[in-house]
Image 1 (cartoon, rainbow, N blue to C red):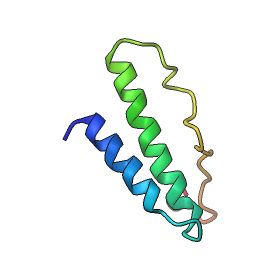
Image 2 (image 1 turned 180 degrees about the vertical axis):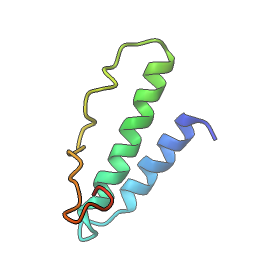
Image 3 (image 1 turned 45 degrees about the horizontal axis):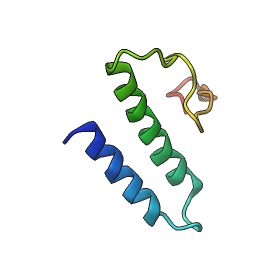
Image 4 (image 1 turned 90 degrees about the vertical axis):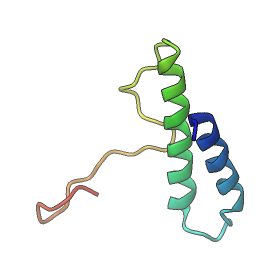
Length: 70
């Protein structure tokens, strides 16, 4: 599968996520799509600010008991 094909699949899936579904589903699909689009730009040699947050990305929060990050 190419990255362009993966983007199309994610965009198709996003259309079927219902408004009542958890908002995290919309955000996760959008983040994946945006990340893949940045990969395409990066491979074309464009400066895209890989250190910049993706649209919808939030800061990682450490777990209260020292476990995995959320």
